[in-house]
Image (cartoon, rainbow, N blue to C red; front, top):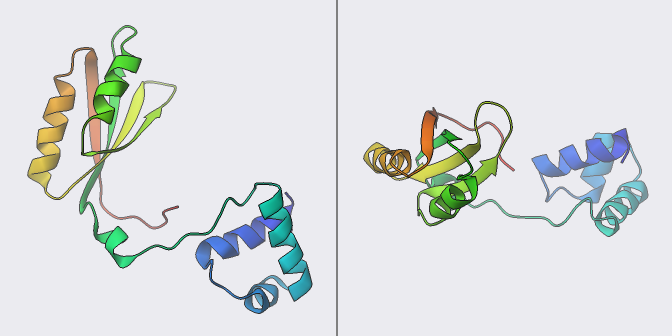
Amino acid sequence: MDKTDERLIAALRHDARASLSDLALQLSLSRTTVRARIERLLQRGEILGFTVVLKADTLQDPVRGMMMIGIEGRGAARITRQLQGLKEVRAIHSTNGRWDLIVELGTETLEQLDHALARIRTMDGVQTSETNLLLSTKKAT
């Protein structure tokens, strides 16, 4: 993938519905070049598909947070399974560094988030945690 492909992908991330003509004008390329590059990116699996973001999607989970979790011993797999069963958990990421897991949480209210945090903190093997509320999102994939 070269710089032109990266610019094309950035333009598509901004507006995946943009016409080939608009993309060509924006990127200073021919319409044929834009179409060929999109087809090549699709064939190579660089672009897996296109999606629609609904207004309702942005209204879900008005209260969101990231919880970093430190786990004692070798309990990460067990704790991950327990986290997968919680309705408030949106994603679970393993990581390196100080924290073993980073968990994305989403709820309707602060009270519900507080309840979820309390349940997670009392799981056997959770040694330490830190939570940050997400106040706004500038870019989401």
